[in-house]
Length: 182
Image 1 (tube, rainbow, N blue to C red):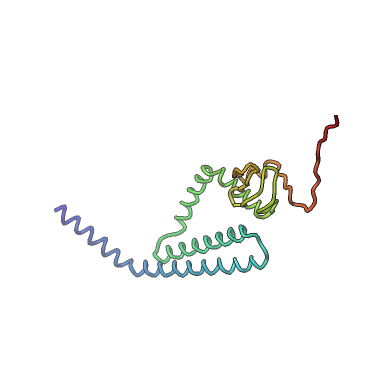
Image 2: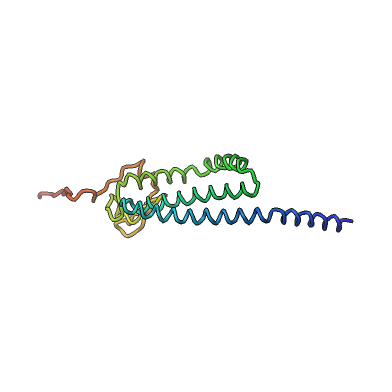
C-alpha cells in the first residue's frame, strides 16, 4: 500500500515536471539571452568609459554593477515565464537584505568609502603617502607598500576618517631639516 502511494506521488511529480518543462526551457533561453546582453553591455561600458579616461577601478565597478543589474532583470523575467511570483521573492529578499545590512555594516562602510576613493581620487597607484607607496586602490581597501618593505591594507573607511598626506600630488616639495650647531 505505501509502495503504491510512493509510486503514485512520484508519477504525479513527473507529470508536473513534464508540464513545466517547456516553460523551464523558455526561461533558460531567456536567461541565456539576458546573460549575453549583460556581457555585451559590459564591453560597451568598458570601451565608452575607457575613452573618457575613467580609472580602471571605476570601469570595473560600473561594468560589474551593470552586469548584475541585467542578470537580476533576466532572473525576474525567467521566473515570470515559469509562473513564479517575483514580487513575493523581492519582498522576502528585502527582509533578508535588512538583516544582512546590520550584520555586514563594516563591509558596507568600507565599500561606500571605496566608491568615494575611486570617485574623488585623493591618490593614485604609485603616489607616496605618509606611510609608504600606494600599490593598489581597491573598492574595499588600499594596499600601501611601507618604507620598511611591509604591505599595509588600509580600510577605505579609515582614509576618510583620518588624515592621509599625499607627498607626490604636487610636482614640488618642501623639505625641512633640523641642523644642530655646536
